[in-house]
Length: 145
Ligand SMILES: [Zn+2]
Image 1: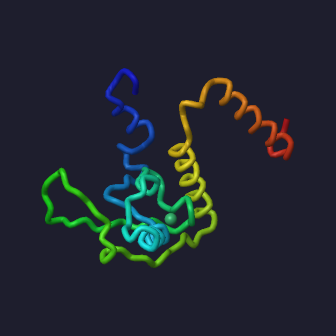
Image 2: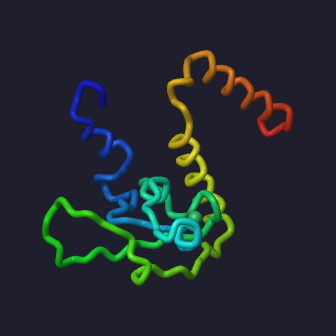
């Protein structure tokens, strides 16, 4: 990725083969949007809802909804505002508990990465984190030694 154009990465993670559903458009959470509207009088686009692989809100587990963008606008450069008249504030949740658990795990992990100060991450910090992870696993006998 550092020395090439990074296109090979899409093949490696399965996006070229279509194994991973690619999100296109703008997504919003009905609950966060309602809270934005009540608090600020405006709904804004949350970056954590736009990430690839994130389909539920990391804050409240509601399924993200796709915002209908005006298809008549043909310009590539356009100001997009989430108009409350075009938003559906009814929250829906994934009914399959196992699927919901995985979706939430991905969503929360992505949010953690997004909000973490990656400049603080170094080799020692990561080594300590990995060591603590395995100590916890062994302590709870999740890993047979
Ligand atoms: Zn939300």
